[in-house]
Length: 235
Image 1 (cartoon, rainbow, N blue to C red):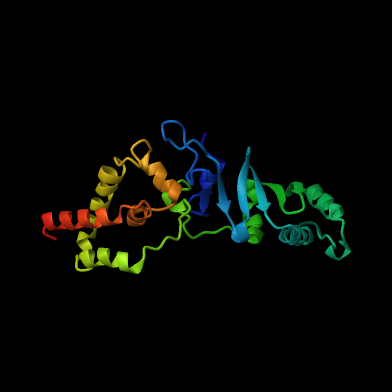
Image 2 (cartoon, rainbow, N blue to C red; image 1 turned 45 degrees about the vertical axis):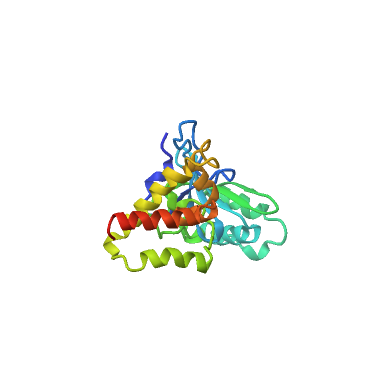
């Protein structure tokens, strides 16, 4: 069943929760993404996600920021005198819930959540500040998967650059094709990976292309393979 939040694709940046054990989206036994657990990414790690039937939930992972947002909404929506708040926020919450825009406020020592109707998302967006950059990106795009900051040592990377620096930009797609073939033909069939799904292993490592090759210990073989392929293509 499609997630209600998909109607905001193109307006706000949608993201999907990632399985931390695989660094990938949850998948079924056939490798098909098996989740519609998505959310609107907001400033300061806040989120907006769907509760169902047109109701959304604002999640704020900071009790202090959550209190400040609810105080601002209380003052705006029902004229609540926030100067009367000391430790007990119940009178504020009662006033907000009675007004009706905000529903079912939940908090613990670290975070605050509250429900609101989707028709009020523009109002809530003023306070949670949903991200708009990348709004057209699918929540299940690989661009949304975590990536490891991995650096190939300069002396080893120079071997790659010596082979590719003079190649015209329009021919660089050839390098990507050769790299994919090396991963599929050499690494995937190696003793180290032959019993595993190479794409799953790449996602788990949070690396792509030449970084995964180096991480897996196949760098020298890759350089020789790349040199041979480029010579065969007369590039």
